[in-house]
Amino acid sequence: MYTIFLVEDHKLMAQALVRILQQKGNFKVAEVAETAEEALERLPHLQVDLALVDVSLPHTSGIDLVSRIREKNPRLPCIMISGHNSGQYVRRSLSAGARGFVLKDNVEEVITGIRRVLEGGIYLSKELEEEKKQ
Image (cartoon, rainbow, N blue to C red; front, side, top):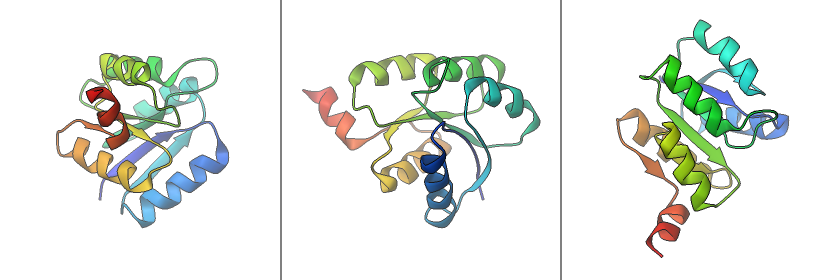
């Protein structure tokens, strides 16, 4: 069973994601951090297989957090999760070292994206792939 570190500042969204990841994805969620600072403080003390990071966090963006995570732990894959369907966020996220970008509103794609990245691939939500082609 793979272990996920979730960084999500909205409590209800975090609770929903934890439940979905554990029940539908059969993943274990090691911990949930609400801020980038909290994530950077906790992460060195955890054994996780992947970080799932919200793009919009208080004080520091999730994109900046992924960049900092990758500096400290280049082998830890990170996926951005967002409600923003914007190519700009996707490009910045991938440049920061994220291995995927999924939209929060599609639970199945969140799970598919995590699995693809854990297998060594890169994953973008289908809607984002379509936007990229246009």
